[in-house]
Length: 231
Ligand SMILES: Nc1ncnc2c1ncn2[C@@H]1O[C@H](COP(=O)(O)OP(=O)(O)OP(=O)(O)O)[C@@H](O)[C@H]1O
Image 1 (cartoon, rainbow, N blue to C red):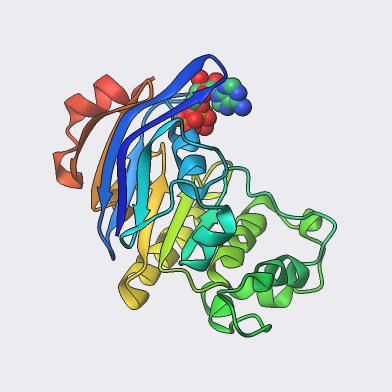
Image 2: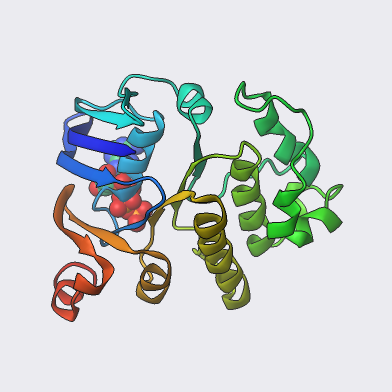
């Protein structure tokens, strides 16, 4: 479903991503891991078309999207939950959710009810301003906003940063449900090992902009953790 081939990215003179190759199958759950600053967010931004790639290619469902806009990627079913949530603080919860509905992929202009089945608290808070929600509520809103378009792949950048444990559990359960009930592909950048192990079936480990190891989650040994994840 998602194929990244020999992807390179530079910020000005700094070479950030080096020949990154990844193959992510439809319906799989993949966790991209690595210490701070290794290039995980940069990779997701390239995937979403928020940053141009210097070379290499990205294909989604056999369609080359390397040079496509974020709108094109959203229209072919890629949902994105950015690091730091990026909720519109002045807009209500309902307005935040409706922002996505302008996308062509969504024919209806109403928020699908199932979004509230995953995150019931949002239904009670429809008229609250995004900026007045707690961090955990904002994170639910950020995920819900991506789900409004009924994506077949959901890309999340550290959804648990600064979130209380019961919401972390809720997010874990929702991701597993989306994968099971809708065969949604989950691509997750995550630093916390227990969460990564609970959600990911496969992992990619990055170090200094390169993929240094990948495989099925049980192959993520203590040795690899020590070498590439421990601080
Ligand atoms: N806008 C930018 N301009 C220049 N360099 C940048 C920019 N954004 C990130 N970098 C650099 O690119 C490298 C990779 O950053 P990136 O945010 O992708 O890493 P990360 O693995 O996601 O880290 P974190 O877990 O802290 O988010 C870092 O060295 C960072 O300093």
